[in-house]
Image (tube, rainbow, N blue to C red; front, side):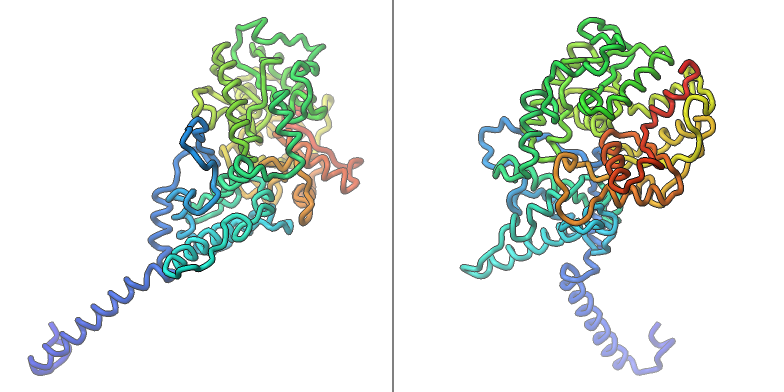
Length: 477
């Protein structure tokens, strides 16, 4: 073949062949040796990371074995406490910055940068490896030096970093693991949440209100708990906000009205219901969370609950995706999903604007409903079914929607660093041109309502739940 392109003596061709062969051999071997230290390594580590990405529900927190008497550590306190997959995450990062560009904490000037958290894990890993060869070399701590507490507690667990990462990196598991260490091992957490933890522990709710008052909001609705009327088609899991927060109570009442109008036979737990444990888990207090979850699973089993509807996406995600790890397997619906089903089945009849103001409405996607559970269409289908209502969309919507700022326990913490996330989000929603913001989450309701108040827009703008819009349009309203 060589003679077709190069007219030379056979001896010269033999020498040229040896030179070219050895040149390519050395080049390839050098490339292979350099590969783990160069950017092209991400072709392999990234592909492997995507291949081995968890198939569990988004943002899933693995059950921690708290009964292991041999355990000396809970959570992530040092590099060796990270799983091999979290270390692979660190190797797979290509520094594209999509996580930081979509992180609400980073966008509002807080110290958290999801990309830097992952890169700092890798830098710490490389530091430990290098120091093994240097006797007496000083190694920085993962906590405090490489990653600070302010970074960890700035996270709203909105999942924007994970959903926007092209390499399948799961930043949230690393952050939650480090929060678990701070809470369980160091008792190092924001002072504001002490009362929240005590409220959950003593009264079963973060408001620290008496558990016996869970049904006070429904005194005039003749709601009988399952302990009195055990027969039910579906359980209405009211949740802590729906039971104790004045604004969320209006949503609970609206859903009761809708369920009765549709002829749905539903039940409630009443004083037997406890906090679902979601907030405690995301704040790293796995012990408290498992106590609450265990009590709830036992109660739900006692009343043979199989189908649940709730107005809170945080409870929805926990009951649906995390309770199975504790023996609780249920069909869980968000109230917008159930309302969409009832409308499609013709079990709800809606009237025009005489029972509620028409006009433009912009829908805010809740993180725990959207990015965690991919529920984007049901709320919009419900809103489109409302007569005289026009659905607008914000620039950041669906999977790109900006968090309200309340997730990950931030609902209970002061926002002292950077600017307020809820103000950034309300600006985006108002920019759509709609005067009404529709939500499907009690936490979003609180944060966005506060945003409108802070901007002195209460006379022109309002925040309503999807259920309230439907309840106001029922033909018998």
